Length: 265
Image (cartoon, rainbow, N blue to C red; front, side, top):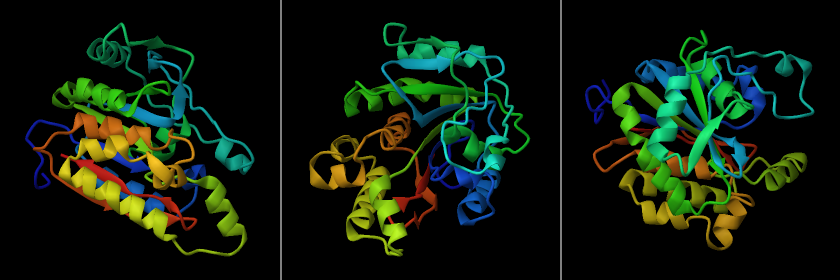
């Protein structure tokens, strides 16, 4: 058991998932995802909060057999052939909705597992034998509301459920693609500074910093849209001051895309 992990309680995991190609490439990131499978205790189920289910509402997938969603375009055909046939868990979906509150959340059967979830989990548990439920991100909510939903879901950690939040600490794809096409592989200072500031705030359980991180020019540069940042708030909300924080994966892809991952607990 890792230092700082409380017996019988699951940790919380935030993963920088990056490109969908990490699902089929053998690279530093896919190898690091496989390493998570040896570091994490095996859960009874996973509740995943992915940047790619960003909608007007909080929903939990109630599918018995969630579909593998290929929510991207312009990639090699081999990527569209990938399937991650993990079972769902309607019971976990109902439990998540009850914890969040039926006035704020509801069940949903028209979604499945998008690549923010399966491109990571197929490396962590390649047997696809751990049940997975996805929870959507309500794009209308304030940062404090996302933290509050994370706090509401924290009891699941004592019920054998791994909370997986999947996004990226920095995610400015326009900048990343422009720099890549120009042959610029250097990590800009704004990306490095934002990434380190978030790491420091996670380590200190500084929710005020995390809630305000997107305010101002630095936040807008790191995240022109908030979808890839908000999953981090669910992880932070489900954690508490007693959780040790470590970063099993750090570094940048395409210069400015932070691939930092965090285990809390």
